[in-house]
Length: 412
Ligand SMILES: *Cc1c(COP(=O)(O)O)cnc(C)c1O
Image (cartoon, rainbow, N blue to C red; front, side, top):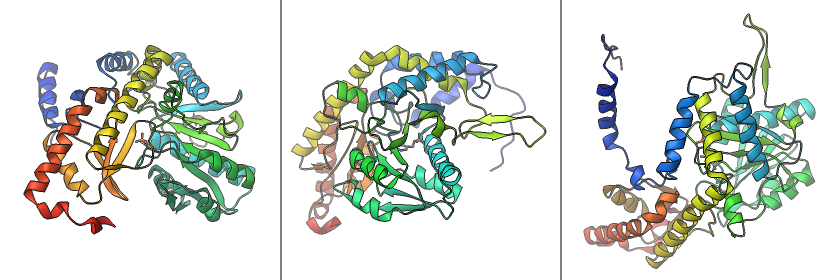
């Protein structure tokens, strides 16, 4: 819809007021009411994000020669990630604008590796479990690669099904650590074995897990190997703007070697503007996203991440226990920040809607129909309120329509 630009400008205090009132209808994430979209590590981290972003908000990561500051910060952030994820000495990576960007670039690298280094000719395909993120489908739609989604078992990737779907034109197989719908880490060890046996490119989508799993393991949880520790893993995506608690617009993509990373980079000079080399999907790269990531990681350090993630673990354990006491079943054995739970005799989607009346913005699963939470440190303090509100929602729905609470066969 067309809208004329105001003829005269408005002063900043006036605009700030307008924007604040526009935000009044938004989910109250600062109070812990969002368990999707926002990762709330508290006001201390929020302040570092904001001030560090503002310091470099005009600088452009497209120009490493002009901004050696950003180049250095990116190298250090990538180095932190590679160390946390057991990258070999020669491993390499880049900061991207988000998980979708990281995944797109990993798919591009795997495709170019297949066609240039291995001579694989199209039509190409990738094989992924049903629970993998739609970002792979988007990347494959852009690149005209066929997506083969395979069935899952106990909410986890099934290596046998994936092996059956892979063939000579498979440029990538995918495992999630963890998957978004269930919060469970796929059997990456078995996928790594499959990748080695068949010489396949295994990508681990650790977008939501890459910056929490290593610390949860340090805190004592038995998180299985899922990263470059496994020799079949060739690339990993890990989002800084999720459990890295960095400002939005920041993810990382990693490759087992600098040689593999080369297949990601786009290098072009056949136009009148001179040679242009871009490692990721973006041209202009916001300096603020890079500087905020660098600052938050250095602000928290290993100890800070361990402490923040311990709160996430605490919230998850408390909520898992609470929902089980309310008759729900938690899907699988989640170890990180996401959990999904279901009760086949209740309408979980109606519960989700009811909870919105109490301000909760959460998510759902559809196979089976269930409730889904992606937890942040703030939730350790509001878990009890959530459980009380869930109980209220169940009672309210049961009182309004007793039939809804009946047949077991509803979703089966
Ligand atoms: C969030 C997510 C993505 C996509 O990341 P964006 O930053 O939203 O583009 C990919 N995979 C998984 C498992 C995710 O949770």
